[in-house]
Image (cartoon, rainbow, N blue to C red):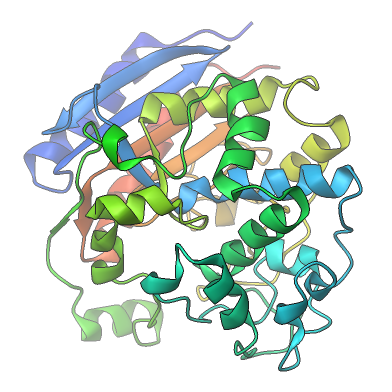
Length: 372
């Protein structure tokens, strides 16, 4: 029988306080849940427990799970081309890209642009897909599609249901889990959302090159792009790849619900696929296998867990999905814990927040004695 180790809870909170004191965490929340209940729920720095935070990419699994459920219903097949559902996507060599490849960040269009002015205009988005091109052969690699893939998935949801993707995700994946809406928060319901703010200094290119052997990657996840989510209109859109808004407590409890679900939220075959079946094991830019299912990153081998953002102490069965600039989210069926560490301070140096994020998630993963 597992039990909570009080000394380890104290160690986690002490390390959180330390990161606030030295300026790595401007404000945030840490929540850990066990057996369906919160065992840690603390505000950090200048954020309170009454506020909600930006999840950024940690919202992706909610959209992916909705797609998996619709596929299980027969609305489309995971191994069929996206263009069978969204015909405008099938241009410029994209006609054979499958739904599965999009879910697995294997579609070959990681940086396909979707300008902000198209976010709230579905017709414009559908037209935009027709000009997208691939930059590598679909299915042959893993390269994180920060926003492009989940716009496609969101429009597939709308195409087969006739409804806004955020409403479908909320009704199918969130509400049955006892969770609130994470996507498309109306402007008049945003008073409790903590604004994000840039902190720290950018990494020294020479130091980065010396540490990793290559230059700092250029991606669309820029400080400017992340700060754009302070705009109430942007929050209201429900950007499916990074526009989630939730408290850390809500995230930790949602993961508990998914982990313990017996068919009330997900079909058993959908849950098994999403939580256990690795379908993407190409390496990332650090040379670490992606170890992804259709919805989550899995713990897998010990050497890759911290590099994938899950910390050093979770089991191979742990599943989760982080968000930009310090949102650390996972659950571990072996320990029974679910963990959500969230911050409103967007550190300009990835190496800084990866260091403290790994330290905190590793301490959080030790709060119980393992089962078995």
